[in-house]
Length: 485
Length: 95
Image (cartoon, rainbow over all chains, first blue to last red; front, side):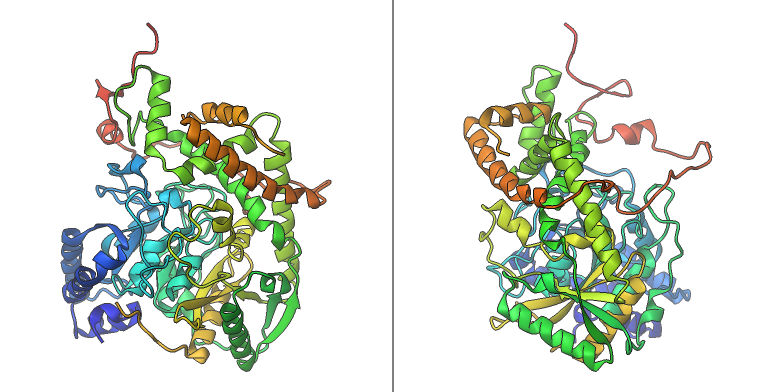
């Protein structure tokens, strides 16, 4: 195998023994990028020079006895994460020239651990989308089928891992934006509990839903990335002051005797037969491991997308009010007065999907409609959270499909906003309830496209997710195919 | 509930966005599709349910009131389209 094909833990072992060095690993990743990036377009910008410099620095650290798992590992960052001195666009024309004065806390944590940043990964504009088609910088293509979407909004971060254009990546998940592309690209993706990872330096979309998380080639790598990025941060007042366990200690553990909840609402109409088949096989593997699968009910599932449409757009409308063409971001030319600076800069700087969501959110919060929309949605959100609390009294974790279908065609849903929102139907609930979720590859469709199974747990129970996902990955022994690029 | 073109123009004004007549047309139809889907929320009985505005139960995050390092004036202005004398510059507001 080539170096860029390896996992974090495999490379770490080779780096420690001196079998390879970080510069060689980074060069291998860039050779791969040079070979496939023109077809995949996973990145908005590459950090070639910076990467080779930090790889050399990592080699000095390793030589001096550094034991960090991530030291010298090439990692991609979704372009929604601020990088000090390096352009960060959030996939938008609005921020096409924005150079952050500081690093996001999660970025800083990876840097401290010695990770080597390869580049800024493509994404839907302001993370609003499920296909990476709304990016101002062009679409990303699914490495498994270049005519299809990698999913979104972290489509570039998922495609880069699947195409071996990095070893792991960091994405963000507001309604499924890590887990859905992970499923569609055949990689592992985790959304941690709300508050587990600092959002400082994450360009805001919907502040009560956004969470940063890793996309990796396997579950052990996911644990390694989580160990690096989870911590309380005084710079994010919503980050949790709860101890972070060593997630690696949950690997290689038994799950016999566990109760695994199967919510019947997640196996309803609209689920692709190949996905159903693959997820059923996953249930079989979990049962063979000695866990008991129990039916649970999440009665408000059918309302999740509607609640999300209101809550996320209301928060987005407020968050994106900051883009006014004054302090940073795009400013329109030829304007006469201040109001025109605002209106023209925003109208030219934002794309159609972002405007659509700002409009919906502004409407939902406008005078006379607040109770009917935002308040109502927040009340139903409380019922959704309650559903999960009740379900987790009966089971340790919940198992569902990650996405109702494998990767859809580019262009298939882009002109039908509602159909696009419904592609996140199984992932949105975790963001609304604030709970953690992980998507793990569970096979392929008859057309050869990857399929993902999702595990959900109660707040701050990421360890349980590592445990079952790792047990599943080990026992299922899903065929290790690589996309034929 | 449905929304008409006049309301779309009013909401655009609130959001500081400007649309062409064709865009107004498209947004009116898109938003109406989404709003009619959202109507299903009215099927849920929420009488007496406390709205959930945060993902986690949280209280205030207090800290000591001490000065810590922050961005310099120069760094704060580095991304501004126009600056003047250490400040952000905007078009004249008062004639």
